[in-house]
Amino acid sequence: MSLFTGQRAVLAGNVLLTLAEGLKMPYIRVSCLTGALNHTQKATLASRLADVVMGQEIEPLTEIGRAAAAVFFDEIDEHNWFPGGVSLLDHPEKQYFVVEAVVAASFFNQSRRDIVQTEVAAAFVAVLGDDGTSLEREGVTVSPAYLMRLHTAIIEIPEGSWGAGGRTVDTELIGKFIGAGQGPSRFAEARALGAKMKAARQLLES
Image 1 (cartoon, rainbow, N blue to C red):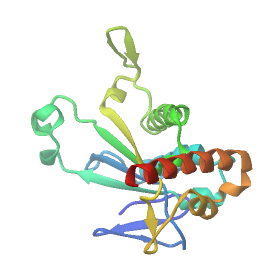
Image 2 (image 1 turned 135 degrees about the horizontal axis):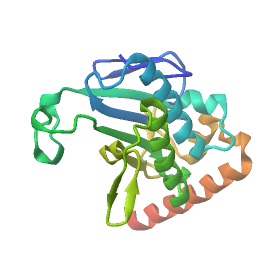
Image 3 (image 1 turned 120 degrees about the vertical axis):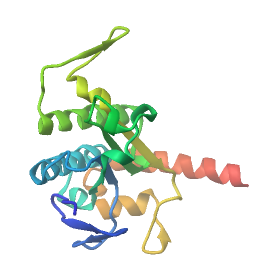
């Protein structure tokens, strides 16, 4: 069972059952070892991750937008986790996390991707704490050291490839679902990028 702050949902089999109507995007999956996070930690992390990702999609972050973000946790047993091809059963490090944020590409540029990476790491430190360790490799320092075992992938769905309710949803429609219109300048930025993506796709397919 997974906890989604703001809007609550449970993962039953392969079906995401939400208590709210409407489009659910972005969605964020956290893969971790079974038992790595307790219920309270999941709740706190889910809330922060939803705010981190949706906060880069729309400005200002609204309750409608926050409610549209879905977070779920995929717990993996030790015998099914092989970092570096080595079974975690035989590995000295036991703390690994993978965060996948599936988003509409038109709402992101490089600056926003960089902010998501920084703030996802900050969310984990807020939940797990700073153990005072650090790791340095070729002049790059990571602190706390366990952040080297946190991997975040922003998976961007191109304009025309996102769907809900049996239909394609584009930037314009997504924006209406998540309350993007409350920040007109930010929404205009996403619409402009979405239009460029749509035009480029049409050119490739012509």
